[in-house]
Amino acid sequence: MNHVTKDICYIGVNDHDLDLFEGQYIVPLGMAYNSYVILDQKIAVMDSVDRRFGEPWLKNLEEALSGRTPDYLIVQHMEPDHSANIALFMEKYPAAVVVSSAKAFTMMKNFYGEDFADRRLVVAEGAELSLGAHTLQFIGAPMVHWPEVIMTYDRADRVLFSADAFGKFGALDTEDPEGWACEARRYYFGIVGKYGAQAQAVLKKASALDIQVICPLHGPVLQENLPYYLNLYNTWTTYGVETEGVAVFYTSVYGNTEKAVHLLEEKLKEKGCPKVAVSDLARDDMAECVEDAFRYGKIVLATTTYNADIFPFMRTFLETLAEHGWRGRKVGLMENGSWAPTAAKGMKALLEGCKDTAFAETQVRILSSLSEENKAQIEALAEEMLR
Image (cartoon, rainbow, N blue to C red; front, top):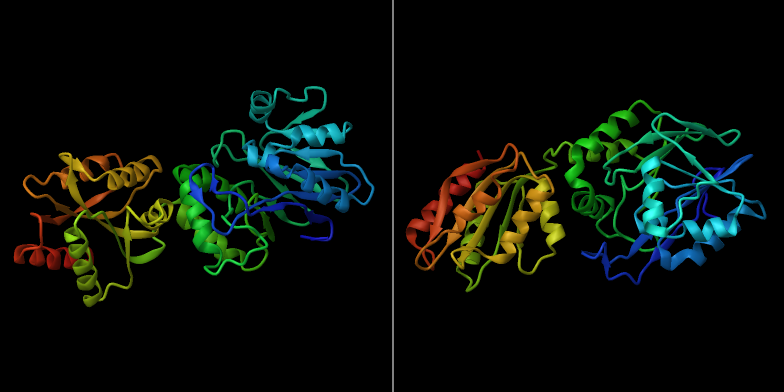
């Protein structure tokens, strides 16, 4: 039995067959769908799992119950990777009550054709549910990252069930060589990142609680060095700079823009830049590129003119940043074009709506291949990006 505390057991499952999470994120280390059960005078199950794992989940639950019957199924988030087995659970345990927000029950009806009107308890911000020794306090977390989301705080064991917050990519039975932060960062900025203000509001609520354990719906249970995770989340939710340095993102058709990028990388390192992260947008994972754009305080964009505009991968990247609420960064621009370079203008236009974005005065304009003038521009851009 996998105990989180004496009375709380982990009953989630690992997924190693998923090709794309949410239809877009590669998950080479798999994915965990977390569920928990609180064993007290009354028993509460925290969320279900993806539809493909209903039977293994119920088997894990039965093992934890040791012959007892659950009283409540608490639904914190209605995305199907957490809610798909609600009906299966309620069929197996017909005396149980579903506990969730009003918006969640509307979504439940829309997703599954049933909202359990005769067996439900609607809760909102500040509502409490006593299980005996354990009292659960519900925290409204709208738009972290769906509107119906609630989080749950167990006062007895000082555990925060955090829904999708503090989640990460990766199955729990697979070691992550990069540690927690890398895949947690990619998960946060890809999935929750647009809603930093809402996530920050929930963090402020959580700061008033004595939290000893965080139980997310994806990724490991967090029990040690909680300030590390909380500080990272505070940085991410406020769009702060996590890593000092420069991230460079480029596309290149015949290699000339790529040469310019590597020359810039060399100049930045020569001038003492603490870290330079270079990404080829046509070949590197787009979600990791988005992650780095949020991670660093300064970025350089380098691309070719294509159809009198910008290269498609760069366009996708910048549109993704804009729709994720990217902001507060310094941006350097490098463009290439054989007869009429327009890429810099196009890149700037795509970032116009991003708050607190400052553009470097130095702009590199390449006409097909690097010239001596371009080399001088790159030197000047490196200087400016480090000021």
